Length: 253
Length: 253
DNA sequence: AGTGTTGTTCGATATTGTCGTACGCCGTTC
DNA sequence: GAACGGCGTACGACAATATCGAACAACACT
Image 1 (cartoon, protein in one colour):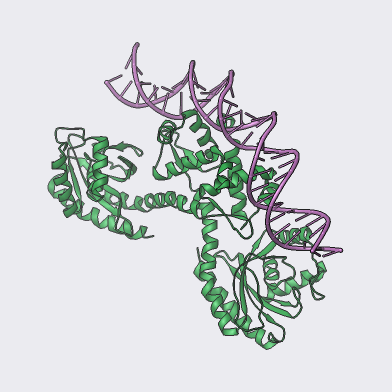
Image 2 (spheres, helix red, strand yellow):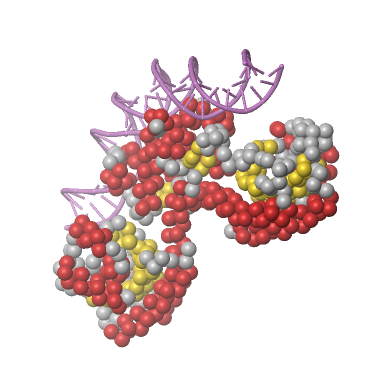
């Protein structure tokens, strides 16, 4: 594999040290050196760097090094996201089957939202989408419901940096109008996208909260306007909110 | 701090990439470069190395990189150990109070055992010990109970490399005699140190198992021979084994 | 079809990381 | 108490590496 020719030795060595420490409670500099076949001065530089970055700590009394919990913390961020997708999947499958429209799972990522899962309905006319796709917040149901539940400063930063481009003639591009919309969403507990991202497309979105009540993701059901009338949307809202409470409960950690 | 002058730039940079990826779901090479102020060729070498070491993976379709669960796995080893000590602490405090002798928590670490926690009794004549202290397996109660519950090859390696030094005239230094002793311990489910590590000192030890039944630690109660008669030892055995089952249950993960 | 952006490749070279030597500290042995 | 050995740490020379500029291929967009 071509990539192997660009490997950086010091990073590989640092990784080897981490692995060694993960299999021993503590190790000294010389011990690590002997274990890995490295000079102790080399090891000293590497563990000093890992210590500076927070991955290891030295016991002042014994001089031995041990891993800290930093990797667990960083790894926990990844695990948490994997968990959510796995837990949400059967739920969005179910809501797709019941309402026969495409369902999505979306997370905020910096200045945009990212679709991390989707279950497309089987009707010929359906909303197709791509996992991994990024969209702005302001013009999607999921985006608006996420904005409605985040701190004002963060909302302002996102809108300032990304702007509020018009995707259709229905896209809300006025800051004050969007603020009013977000307030409404906050009260209702869900958002509706009325052909704001795409003409002919309507969607309903609701938030997923973590154990502290913080909104960490959103789900949505999207369909063509001709099928997504107000009555159907009403039914979807009820099921979506109940579903998301179940997802939140299962995520409790 | 003097250590800072020995920091290794590439390891620091790799760490910065990991942090960046932990706060974004996915990032491309150029994006990481811009985010961290690094040349994209530099970033390419670093993420290739992190990928090779298993910390990141590239989505073949989008070309973007994301963290894997490896950090969670490595970090989990650290977290697991921290967990054990925290969970065990109130238990060994309690057994110390009941039997009025020093209690220990010990883990295997390479070719030796390490005391990771202790609760000393309050009597003037007591067994004092040090957290962090390392001892050989063959001459301690906790060491013997750990040996009795590990694969034979591992036992042989430990004994071959560390030898079986005599600490007292009671230390078992004959391989075959030790094998018989370990078989007995396996059957009984606990070990007794009859002045093998130190004259005048007796101790009882029992194993702590993980969710798969694998022995991962041991606890012990130690006291002077004049107090630790057979009847007292019998009472300690009962409580120690019950205690360790409770600890194991609480560790279930 | 043209353009722009990205990830990847390659090689020159500046910079870094390695390692040999030395030092201070500490524990052990006599 | 002295001597010794092993450890972690410090320092500097220099060989080896990591960086980065240039170029290329692939892909998405218009």
